[in-house]
Image 1: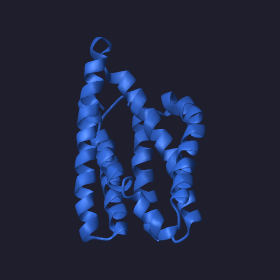
Image 2 (image 1 turned 60 degrees about the vertical axis):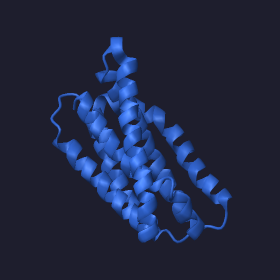
Image 3 (image 1 turned 90 degrees about the horizontal axis):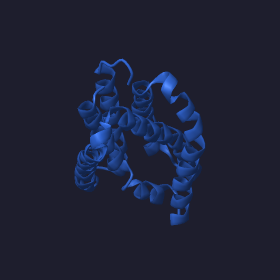
Length: 180
């Protein structure tokens, strides 16, 4: 994986993530009965990720960035298929804990790839460009998903995002690399 391909990959998963996260509260409102439950769901996600970072960081150099990102892409693709089936708030909590683990895998891997591939002398410029393109992809996804939700069901965006994650995993798998 090179820097340019990594930006493409991250843009793709950023799009998939942005398709669901801003509209996630609509699903919670359909399953739960308060915004406090949304707070708990997101809090469980963040806390699980925080607790997993040390373990994931410990194994990141051994298993490689590409392997971890592949696990993230396919893990998210599979996990998102279960969100529309959640009928109780505790179902969402379990899914959020699993997403917390995967989120930690992604965040840790993102940072290690950037650390490995940016040129030290122009790291600020390269990371700035990285954030421009991944943010543009995320913005496009949020706007487009707003229209999709108007015409489709809230559940459909989870299925579409699942397909995008699966596609990102396939693209990642095709990349030839020695280290990443």
